[in-house]
Image (cartoon, rainbow, N blue to C red; front, side, top):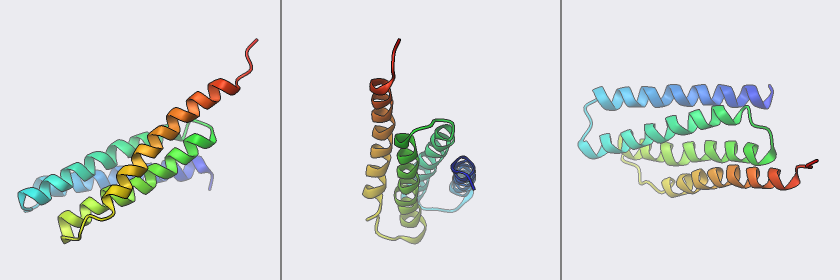
Length: 122
């Protein structure tokens, strides 16, 4: 499977999970704090699923690194919030996921700067 197909499939899967979580949060019988955590998790997951889909079309190592960091962020940040909201687990993975999201966005920015410095201009 190519990188593009893999990331497209993962973006679609994450989008579907985010929408399912949103539906559950809207129609489930959760306490207010758990519903708030679920709401935050699905928002971040959906946002980064769309960003992952956009990265499929962008070449470069920095963008590949960003996609991997977004996937780690989804697992740790969103997964940690889901586990906290639904299973009452401690949110110890959430900060790692948030850091991964930040590093992913920085990788995109640095990749753009790097690419601009290495281009040959006539």
